Amino acid sequence: MSRRPYLEWAVLVALLWLLGGVTGLAVAAAFVVYDLVRAPAPRDLLVVAVLCLALVPLVVLARGLPQPATVGPGFVTGNLLAHHLAGAGLALLVVGVLREVRAGADHSDEEEAPAEPPRELPSQARRQLPPGSAP
Image (tube, rainbow, N blue to C red; front, top):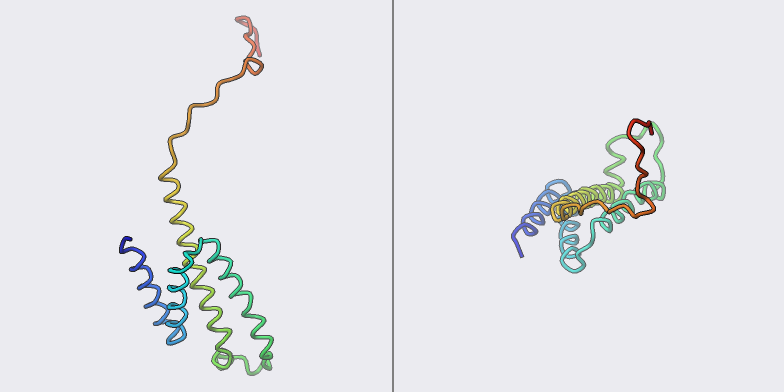
């Protein structure tokens, strides 16, 4: 195994730890273990990211909306579950998109040269027009 996955995991863990604190570190560690055990396809990561992001409004509504006069930074600090779900969803979205783009680039490099065009069947052959006549 190359060093590339280890470097990617280290960058992900460091970034989520920096941005999310202890919770970001826990999410990053859980993702690394999940990635080692299951090796999810990029599409799976994108589906999980969409689910995390879709849960954010439900979590906010479950806690109750504040009065319009009280909406501010305190609203986010009072609802950290929604905040961390959004952060995890965005992180998974970025990782999933990067993996899908890389897989597409690797796939296009491996494609063989296009085969020669198919030959026409006798029934598809063009009719020869006499010289001087317009098609």
